[in-house]
Image (cartoon, rainbow, N blue to C red):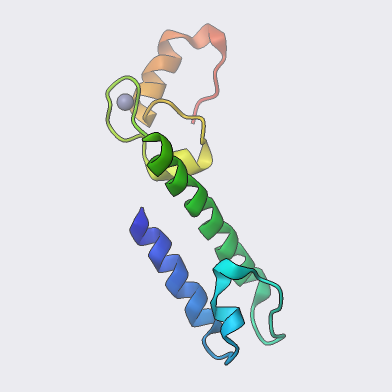
Length: 108
Ligand SMILES: [Zn+2]
């Protein structure tokens, strides 16, 4: 999951590398100004994804978050991003949903 984060960082840096202003490279200090020739929507999306990853990583670090309460395996980063409140891995969730179908919990 760290790898995905670093890959995104690279993508954004590649996107911005032709601008000489280091303010635009240092995304962590704010995203105040973007030159016109940059695909802002794409960079925006990447920055958003990075922030999501940052949040999720922080949660994982702070709370030792992300282990399935049933089988103790990792829930999976993609799943946690899509469903941060997930307490079970996808397999255990399916099993749980079959057992407790009447509760109408969301399936993923
Ligand atoms: Zn599990």
